Length: 434
Image (cartoon, rainbow, N blue to C red):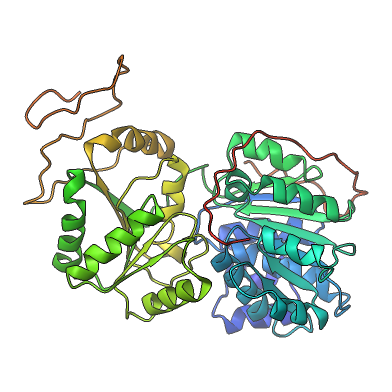
């Protein structure tokens, strides 16, 4: 494995990396940084927690520091959520602390005027959620006509969660002569084709099989009747002495309801989702990081960008409707090579979602019944047979049914390309991320 010094990074960035305690780049950093430095468009896929942010932040800073401060936005990083935007901008500041470059983060859910005032003072790097960026541009608070580098972070989820129209509007505001990077944990075939409409002959970098889960995360399925899930979760927190657990629910209402139940059971819990104000979300996350909150109950979109060191376990209280979200969820634990545990509380009516996840990750998940919580409705084994009408639940005791397309380095003359089109449904959570 190479050292950061072998990737061609400047001393100012190497010193910042050393200050963070890193010496050896992760696989995604080692493979993505060189083509980014060479001016190539890059589509990079790697599991959450493998260092994607530094993989684009470090070469971005290097490209920009050659000119230094200019007062106008030269690099734009777009993320789907406020939390991820704040996390990325924090990385920009930490890795860029020995440069003279300035950065700013903007997102919805907070007052816009302080953000306008900050932009007036001049920044070279802007991190933003799509809606707030468009609001600021419409007010003349930000100009993007001198942009040199665009990054779409969590690109597949952003395009697939209803942001596509905002992204298209933003793309039209940018110079056609630019470098474009897309970083994400997963890229579906449809999203990959769509992304190419925004890019010029991108280099594809993938360090793990698509939609795979990290080997450092041990996974279990606990079959349980739906009505007994809250009691089982409380039991697990107490029995396993969990002091920090991230719990995923499918809906905002479900997150609130489960939080109240856990609190009644004497477990300090907090919910984080799109209906919460930015202040409430920040307080809940900080309390969780500091160990004052045992259980943080989150929806998928609100959990985007949660960066919690050494998070020991994740619980799927509800299985996600989209199998790829399972990969994102359990990627919150087992980060940077640390051991992690992922538990899924699965009822019989979630069998289809479970089979979909197992097909996606290409392996069955081990099942383990918890004593005292054995389900009355048996969770079927294997892929269910197709049948006419609504399937009856089985009663207990009865029948249960990249490649790395490297090219010679160097910049090319970029061609203008028309934006692509899609019928992707706007299924974005009304989260205030605008």
